[in-house]
Length: 214
Length: 70
Image (cartoon, rainbow over all chains, first blue to last red; front, side, top):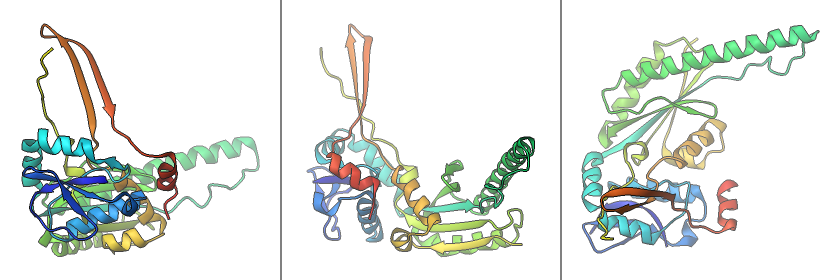
């Protein structure tokens, strides 16, 4: 079995997900055959979330074995219950800004000096566009009153995550679209809004302090 | 020129092969809780040794599959 996260016990999960553990906090898990890839695990966590269950997600990038997750459910139950209370009824909205690549990237200069100059100009342009993308994200994030992460770099742009009530998704999208219409700073830029996801960026590793006598 | 805005549900994102959305999924995969094991060796209330471990238990084949998702 592979552990996917934690939620309150005594809930009905969609198949093929199962709950494990005897306490108030249970481990959400699934058979290894259903969790072969990271995308499988992310998809299963999304199914739990879409079923209306408040789940503390483990990082889907790894296949977590069940025993340490069960240990945490038992030894860090208070912390996990506190986290479930914090994210109850809420999910993560993700906003990404991206901009098109510079079409002159592979152009050759007529001389070495010319090529170096172009390289320097291109780097300066990338830095400026990156800063603009960050500014756009800040402006979009500021249009919604919700807990949010810092701006995080991604491979092709920047991302910002907000913790929203499940029912607030449509209104948040409208607010972002309205704010995006007023921004023209990023020529050719794209804003991608997705969600709601489980609260990946608003949870932390369970904390427990166990005294072991020497 | 105004910003181009795209709305996508998690289902759309997970099924998509569009670069933007693949990048977004890749970002999410590394977020969430990471299980860590921590061990403090203490003698007479003096902390002597700290060991911190990320728990990763998987087969090489599964790791290869995760790096090359379908």
